[in-house]
Image (cartoon, rainbow, N blue to C red; front, side, top):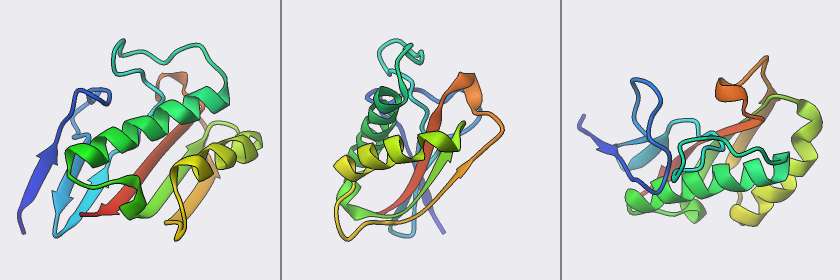
Length: 126
């Protein structure tokens, strides 16, 4: 089994020993994307909706770097610092993912890195 690391400056650089994405067996696996602005390397002081937009744009950039798109997502996982933000993130999610929607899990976690309100990872077909 071979694998290819995906790296783009259009999404935030990894903040640890991991890849933005890895391609293996015709699939792209992304690391969880935080609402980090790739230009500044920081999470802007914005609300949940704007954080969600940044997260999905980061996923979109990694998918593009691998030669795929959000339309080819087959599975996503949404991590929320506060489950009360589910509806807000869900409405933004629907702006980026279209039918047939990928399978999805979403849940609240105790905390996210860097104090983020949302993090999303996804699996894509190439």
